[in-house]
View 1 (cartoon, rainbow, N blue to C red):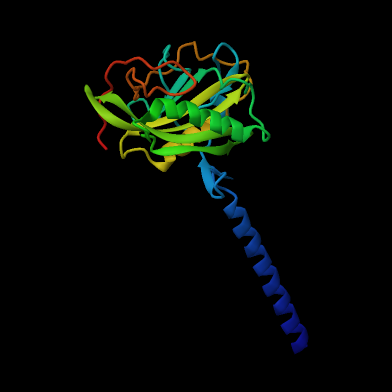
View 2 (tube, helix red, strand yellow; view 1 turned 60 degrees about the horizontal axis):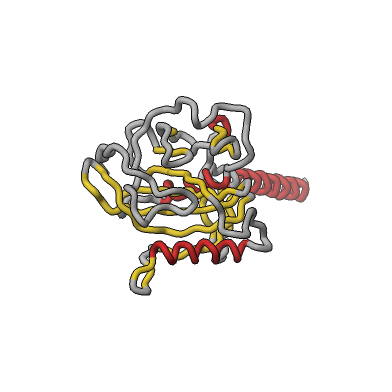
Length: 253
């Protein structure tokens, strides 16, 4: 009788441990942001986007989705779409621009991913090199964002904040979709761009897809401020150099 009781207790203990293990595994899979392995062997966070926020943009070529909880900015000819964390937030701002991809690369696959990265790096070297030295804060590197094979880099820039020109940091990723190159930037004053802003920009890039039968970016969006670099040689790849906007109100860090 005693032996049976000990056996039953061991069985109950094993069952409880198994149940606990299942709960722990399930809890580890419940995060909103996803992680994806980068070309350097590490992982990068890709922010969650709101599927209900999809808009068709860039002449009906693509659909773009907002980071969860972010606000879409007012319409502009300087970018495809812009997002900020809220109606009264000036940074970080996520800006999407579009343009032609490097010559001979109408799409990017695993076969020509390295070629795409090299082509973008060559374009950036022309824009950001002076006296043989690059001013890029982080050199171009291959990055996979959802189903897109892209490239990432970090660059300096300037913008008007509170009427004053200030240096900003621009964390950029670029992908090719529908024979267009889309550059997605997270922008903030120097030292103010956090990991959440970078992850949100990657989420926007990962969420770019074919057009949907929903609101177009050309229709009335919500108004929001944001950082927009003035016209300069430090314009993003994939689009025309942005023109100066009305000065954005400074935000208390």
